[in-house]
Amino acid sequence: MRFDIITIFPEIFQGALGSGILRRAALAGLVEIRVVNLRDFAADKHRSVDDRPYGGGEGMVFTPGPLFAAVEYCRGPVKTPESRVVLMTPQGRTWSQQFAESFSKLPHVVLICGRYEGIDQRVIDSLVEEEISIGDYVLTGGEIPALAVLDSVIRLLPGALGNSDSAVNESFSSGALDFPQYTRPAEFRGMAVPEVLLSGDHARIREWRRQQAEARTGSRRPDLAAGTRAGEA
Ligand code: SAM
Figure 1: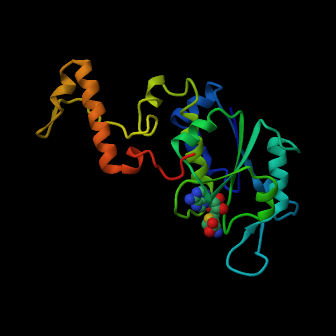
Figure 2: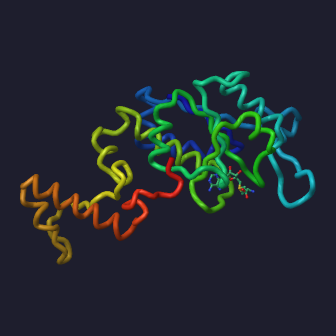
Figure 3: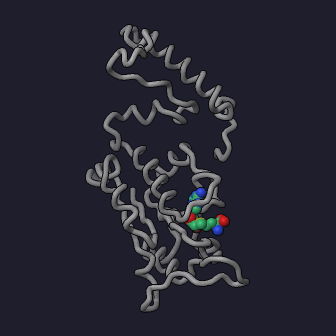
C-alpha cells in the first residue's frame, strides 16, 4: 500500500513514521509513505501556498494552484481507480475502525492536510474523493488527523503487528470494547488480578472476558452495544 501526504509541515511526520510499528511496516515493505511539501509546488519565489479569502473574513485559504500540482504529482494527471484523494477536514465523515478497515484494502491514498481556514473549494470539487474528520473538534491542521488515519490503517496491513490476532480481538473490531487486561505481578499494592485469569481454565477465561467486554460496552458505549454508532458506513 502507498500513502502520499501533502502538507506544509513535513517535519511533523518524522517522529511518528520513524518509530514503532509504522517504521517496521515501512522497512518490511508493507507500506510506502511519501511526505510531499506543498511549498515545493508554489509558483513564486516566496513559495506561497495561501491567500486571503474572497468575500473577506479572518484567516488564509490554500490556493488551488499548488494543491492541483501536488495532487497531480502524487496520483498522475487524471483520476484513477487505484488512487483515493482524501482531504482531512472537520466537515468530513467521521473516521472509524470500519473506515480504517476499508482503507487498508486500497492500493494508494493521497492525504491532503489543510491549515488556516482550509482550502479553496475548487480543489474539493475537482480532486477530493473523500472528506474525513477525526471528530467534532477543530485542530490547527490536518497533520494530526492524517497521522491518526495512517496509524490506524497501517496496523491493519497483514504482517504489520507481531501477533496477527491482536488486530482482531480488540475494541471496535467485533463491534464491542475490549475486556480489561492484567499482567504480573498477581498482586500489586493490595489489588489482586481476578482469580479466573490465573486458573488456566481457558473456557472460563474466554467467558469472563466476553462478559466483561459486553458489560463495558453496555455501560460506556450503549450506541455500540445497540449497533447504532454515529458515522458508521
Ligand atoms: N475553517 C475550517 C472549518 O471550520 O471547517 C477549519 C479549518 S482548521 C483550523 C485547519 C485544518 O485542520 C483543516 O483544513 C483540516 O485539514 C484540519 N482539521 C482540523 N480539525 C480537523 C478534524 N477534526 N478532522 C480532520 N481534519 C481537521
